Image 1 (cartoon, rainbow, N blue to C red):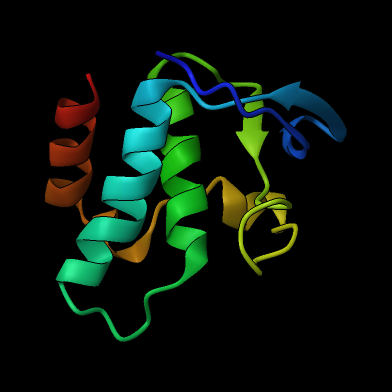
Image 2 (cartoon, rainbow, N blue to C red):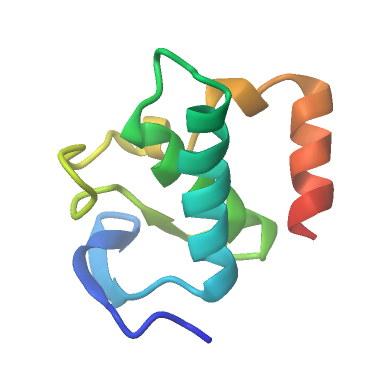
Length: 106
């Protein structure tokens, strides 16, 4: 149930872009945990970066340590700095939040 949409300038291995689309689980992490939860919680600082970061957290949780999404084809975010793209959204940075998130992703 992987997405049939592939991005040309969004997923990277190092500095090289690769053509790739999201898996079903990756899309859920991006949309629900990256967009939905912050929106429902009424976070005034809700940003597109949260969704890109959740994509990358999901990829790492599935063993994809070299691939990351930089957000180049995501809304108006533009290409994110790799350190920001690979970060964890603020609402999940606490120890308990991170543990709950990793448990859910497994």
